[in-house]
Image 1: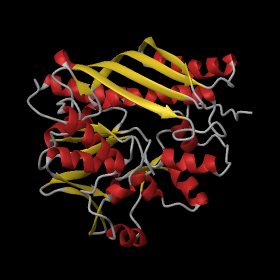
Image 2: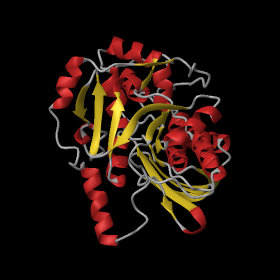
Image 3: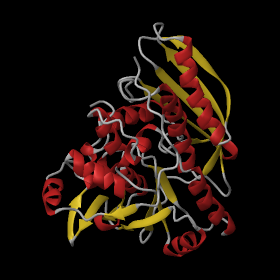
Length: 355
């Protein structure tokens, strides 16, 4: 029997604190592989780029003519979710939310969805309805139409979604436009999703903030559009580099640094971690900062912008969605700074799809 988890959506998102990096963690992080090492997923993507020579591959979405955005993601049973701890409605919600996050990362808005589902024959029609109810709920909340898709049979549940969106003027926000002196800012908080997953895997079904963040992520469409609107008022004279943090904060920093040909410094004391994440991590015996850097699936936004633009963002952002965590510097890769000590962020510790 499936384990149903019903998630309230009114968790106190304001309970955010910051955390210093323990000296023991600095020692561990200092013994890392080169940040230039590629994960297997990145190597496979590189193969696709080499074979296709496509100019559209490299950001959260492909940007076509007139600013049209296209992206796709798959969620696979027992790889991205397990029915032992996730209810079908939440799985459906997450299938849509992860795609919406790609649109948010480009500073755009979603317009349409194609939803394809591989459905096991031993699963009932009533269960299918539960899954699709979650899909419909998330699409409706973010005013996005479901316009088609496909259904086939499979041994396990697979949800493959293609999303269509539109970049807000003046243009889509890319990963490759970070520049020296830029402020590094992020939305929300980090480590909650990974902490929630660990709680669920250990049989803890309490409706905590971390559990809700893992099962029902909230794509930051509004925050991405806020940045685009500010840029539009400036007539596109400045650039913002941005991506989402689906594979972790460290992954986002490393990928933006590589795409832009710069270095990125992150201040450990400024990394936002929710109070309930800290408490849950302590109960589980986990390092909350490691979860924040390498856990993944927080689906927040990671942005680099000029100090002048950052000042306007702070004044315009009444909900305090963006928080400064570092700077863009000369060099390559990304480093974490704690109490004056530096350590390179490790690409091999980011989320590994083929682990």
